[in-house]
Length: 298
Image 1 (cartoon, one colour):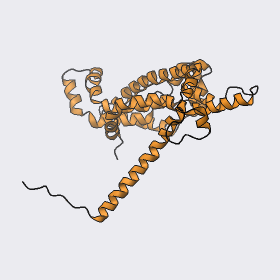
Image 2: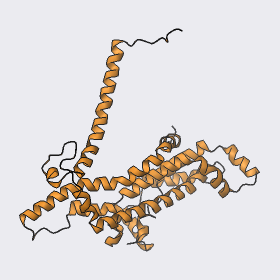
Image 3: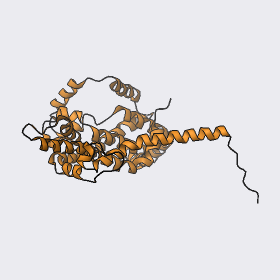
Image 4: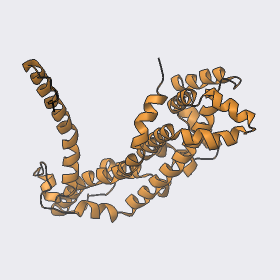
């Protein structure tokens, strides 16, 4: 039996391949090291973190940072609020985006070109923060959960991606065949379009969920009740505003608080990133396909 022929690489090819692997390994190190450092710091003792002893692995293993977080009732309330905003906000946003984008993808929909120009105009020009605030106020949504869900429920860029996906992935022949069989538009959307649109739905879910989870500016504008604050606002108050007064504390107590505060920064980053890290594995197999098919074609 003849041995399979192999192409011998030249010296130049070997050098180029070595350079490629070196570059890729360097990129992986640059990306992974900050993540490992944050996790290691969150699992180290307050003294090790404040003194800069943590370099790669945890030093003097400790869960003090996580205990300080979960003993803080404001963090737990903010975490629950962010889960609420992310879950219901994503459902509402994906539903509205699909219902808006699918009709715009059909050639038989009258006025779709005008509507596309209209929504593109809103992406380039907006009324500004004050008109948006007045609209939310006159709709009586100030200091309510709806203020963080309804005003930003539909994103123009996500609508454009969904329109492109439906236009390229749902042929007109399938629509015509369903109409001949007497299938209504809503039945066709539910039974045919949605099962074929898992990739783009995964993309929309991930985009809207990340936006809702990381959003904090709208909460600072529309919310007054601390019981409605999302996690990001709570973290901002803890890390930036330093809401705890330290004027009457002695030096030893103040130093210990500063050490715990430094440790909490890393623990809060880990805790705040968990939901996104949990969601991504469930949608990542559809994500790339949805982005590529739904991307705007030149």
